[in-house]
Length: 444
Image (cartoon, rainbow, N blue to C red; front, side):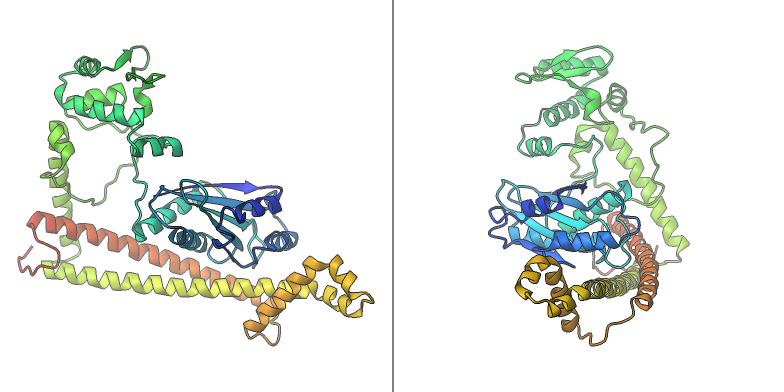
C-alpha cells in the first residue's frame, strides 16, 4: 500500500528541491527523474513559468509524498509507480521532479511540481477533489503493480505510526476492536458485553462515553474513536442482530453490489445477526441481477458473456484513445514551453554574441543561457526548423484539451458500465455456482 499527502511550497523552492535530490537519500541520484524540466535547473524553470502567469497565487510549487509499506516494494518499482502517478495526476501539463528516498525503513517518493502549467500558466487547484483523485490513482497503481491498497474502512483515518503498529499487531485500538467483535456474539446485552470485556482484563470507565484500557495501556480508549460500528448504540444494535444505523446523511448505495460468500465468511460464523443480514443482502442482489438482465434483454448466460466482452472491448478502445490524446497534449505543452523559453531568452543569447568579455557575460547570465540552450536543443531534437506561432498554437492546445475532457467522460462511463456488468456476472456465477469460463446453456 502507499500513503499519500500533499502540501504547497510557498518559499525556499530551491531548498526543497535540494532536499529531495539529496544523493545520500537517492543512491547518488540514481532515483531522480524529471518531466518538462531538468532537475538541476527546475527551480529556475519553475520561476520562468511563474513569471509568465497572470494569476499565479502565492504557491511556487506543490510537494506530493507517496510512502510505501516497509518491505513491500523495490526502489525501482516505487520510482516507477511514482512516475506513473505524477503523469496521470498532472496530465503532462506541469513540469515535475520525482525522487525516491531509500534511506529510511520505508521507501517513499517525493514529487515537486510547478504551481502553474506549461501551456497556459494557470495555477494548479489543490483541494479535496484533486487530492481524492491522487488517492484513488495511487491505490489503483499499487493494485496494478501487485501491492496492497488501503481498503475503505468504517473507522477514522490512521496516522502512519498507528497503521504501522496495527500491521505489526501492536495497536491498542486494533486489539480492542477484535476483542469487542469476539464478545458481541456471546453477549445478550451491552452490560453483558462489558462483563465479558472485564473478564478479558479490560478496565472500563463509564461516563458520557464508554472507554476501555487494556493491561499495560497508558490511556483509556473511547469506543466512539474506533469507528461508527463501535459506538454504544451501534454495539447494542449489533448484539441484537440488527444492521447498524448509518444516519440520514450517509449515502445509500442503490446499485448492484457483490453477493457475500457465507460458507467461508468468518464474520458470519461469529455473528448470527451479520449472517441474517448477509442472507437478506444476497436475496436483494439476486433480485437486482434478475431485473438487470431483464432490463437489458439478456436471455442466456452466453448472452451475458458476449455483452461483457463487447463492453470490455469498448472500454479498452476508449482508454487507448484517451491515452493517445493525453500524449499529444503533453507533447504540445512541452513544445509551447520550449518555444516560450527560446523566444524569451533569445535576446540574452544575442547579447552574448556581441559581448566583449563573453566568459564574464556567461557567468553573469549562466542560468538564463543554460535554459536557452536546453530549449534550443529540445526544439532541434523535436525536428522543429521553423518556430510555430504561439498565438496560433495555444488555441489548438485548448481545443485538444476540450477533446481530452470529452474522451475522459466517455472512458469513465465505459469503465462504470464494465464494472456494473462484471458485478452482475459474478453474482450470476455465484447464484448458479458456475466457474468463470465454463460452458453454460441454462436459460435465465
